[in-house]
Structure formats: C-alpha cells, structure tokens
Image (cartoon, rainbow, N blue to C red; front, top):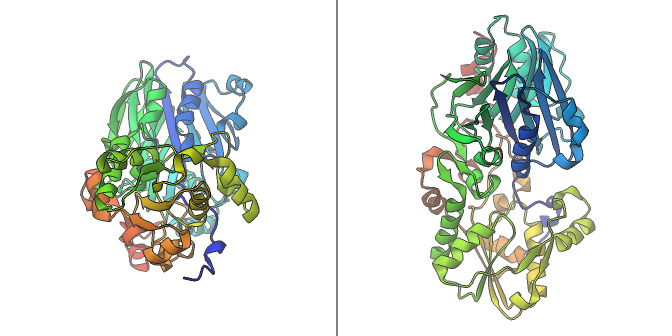
Length: 484
C-alpha cells in the first residue's frame, strides 16, 4: 500500500463534539447561580476547550463574561462579582466553524422586544444558510458565523409578546441538531431538537432547577436528576416549578452514538444508560471478535480505558497501563505543524517499556478519524519493544461526514472513506486491526439501531442532507422556512 496522501490529513484521530451547555434558575432572587454554573462547566470541559462563557440575569439586565481557552484561563475570582444573579447559563465550546471569531463565543446575548435574552447552543443547524439569507434579506444585521445568533434573530422577529410562543415559532423553523438553554422573561428555558441528536437533562436542587448536557454537571453541584429532556421537548422554569411543552413529535430518535463511544464522560448517564457500562460492553464485544493471542491489554488514555477493562475481562488477558499520559498537555490538534505534532504526541503519551517490551500487545482505542496520531502511537509502542501490536477500535470505521455538530464534515479527511480496513492496517503498521461492528455497538448500548444515529458509519442520516451538509431540495420545499 502506498502511503501517499495520508500525511495530508489533519492530526486528529478523534471526532470532536461542538460544546456543552448548562443553565440554572433559583427561586430565591438573592441566590447567586454563577458559581454552581462555573462548577458545572468544569464537569463539561471535555466537551469543548476552545472557549467558555457565563451569562447571568440580575434585575432586568444580563451580564456576561466569556473568552477563548479553558475555564481557568477565561475566568478569575473577580469576574464573579459582576456575574451575580439568580438565573444563568454557561457554555464550553469546540467549534466546527468560525473558530477564530470572538463573536462566536457563547453565550450570546441580545436586546429584543421582551427585554434581554441570552442563549447557549450545542449542535448544528443544517438549514442555517437558508435562514441566514432570509434574515439578511429582511434587514437583519448578523455579526457572527454562528448558528446560535440566527436563533436569537428568529425569536426577535416574532411579533407576539409571549416568549414561549415566540421561541416555539422560532424553533419550528430550525432543522438539525440543537440542545440549548436560554434566559428570557426571567425564566430558564431548555430545548432539545425533535431527533434528540444531542443530550440534555433536567435536575433539581434545594434552590431551583438545572438543565445541562450531561448528568455529571448535575452531580458536581449536588443536583438531583429529574429526567432527560425528551426529543422535541421544551422545559420552562422560574425556579419554583418547571413546565414541559412537547413542541414536536419525534419522527425518529437519533442521539449521536458517539456520546457513548467518546463524547460523554464515563460517569454520565445519557438517556437512562450508563456511559461507563456501555464502554465496558464495547470492550467485551471486541474481545468476542478477536482470536489474537495477546499477553496484555492496554488502553489509549483516557477514552480507551473503560473499554480496555471490558476487553481484558472478557478475554481473560491482563489489563496494563502501557502508555502514560501527561495530564498537563493540551490536545495535540492545537499545533498544526507536522514536527510539532509528532513531538506533542510523545510529550502527551510516553510508553512504559517495562510493560511493553517483548509482549504481544492488544491496544484499545475508541476511534480513528484521520489516522496520523494513531500511527505515531503505534510507533511509540513498537519502539518500546513490543513484539506484536494488535489494535481494537470501539467504533466502526468512520466513512461518512457528520453535519450535526461534529467536526467530520469533509469526507476527504476520513481515512476509512477511501481505504479498506486492510489498507488502514498497513498504514498504521499493526499486526491486526479490528473495528467493532455496528451490530456489536448496538448490543453494547442496548438500544435498537433506529434509536440512535449511526450516520457516520452507514450514511443513514436522520435528516436528508446533500454533500455540502445543507437540506436536500425536497426537504427545503417541505419546510418553506419563513411561511407560517
């Protein structure tokens, strides 16, 4: 196999999810929600490290602090003096578009006919181009390239002075993935799209209600889990009570299966299913597929750890830590130069020679997107003296782009879209390469195939899109974006 062309792939072997959101409303007007929101964002930091922000409502005004980088870079103790309020929302972001623009950092706030409004959004609106063009034609001035700003414009264009109806009318114009929280009319509002692409859950504290991307954000602030926000459901809360509005019947459940494979933290429960238990079962499924005579099982840290535990248990092979992770290094994709990327991989992961030398090693990882980082990791393991290296991946080959909030929107960057498993094995220079099957993954999750989105593996998109990720012409005609 010729390797020409592989090195042109960006150095990122993981799909990256767009962001995490949290909102908190207290029934006590004097209770400050900014600190618990900050803590909740800490629990969601894995969902986005590019930027962060918090907006809070206090006596008719919304204050906001946001910036680029991790939470520790964006916020300092002095910031919370100006963020006092009994309603607040937060956001951590990994962008798929417009990453260089400070205008795209969320939450986004605006003034509208009902006062001030703020919004944080997780996902991707696939009819955003059509919506943007219509808004500009109608005279709107749009400052960012973010889908989120479009939602604010759609709400403000509703002339009905009822925020709940205005929001419902606005979101009926959206097609795509959206889990969002917003501050409006002295209330916290949470919304999940009719397909449920992105997770969202509701929790309760002694002071009020919390809406967040994952249950781990509820845990850190001692909020009791109430329910998952259903696909096509809007939650409205004033802190004392909450109201549920089912705004659209979900035609098909399409939670992204990568929530269980990689995106969500292992200690979260997504739509009633433990992420930790699913990842162990994925490892067990992989072990059942293997006839490899390995001496040890090692994970690619951190996301492969739980799956490797399940693999080792099912196969009866010792689990070892063969790669030591330096926790104080940022993600490798931050540095674009090839030399810097190679050095960064070695700084981030260092092989433990006493574990690997002379061994037949089963390496467990969650995914391969472009292949370059995986290749460098295998090289490290071989240089440490491994006799054989067998790689096991807990997602099927990623062959198709995602248009619903994951940064795999270009098919040409996906190594499995143009190469067979055997060719990828040769490129990685492993003795064997085994991907979990879609059926095995479904068994591990414990849900029917039609209740999750597997489009990046099989091309079965819940919403028909063209090669550019826009709505197909047939669907566009059905939606008739601005006609009521």
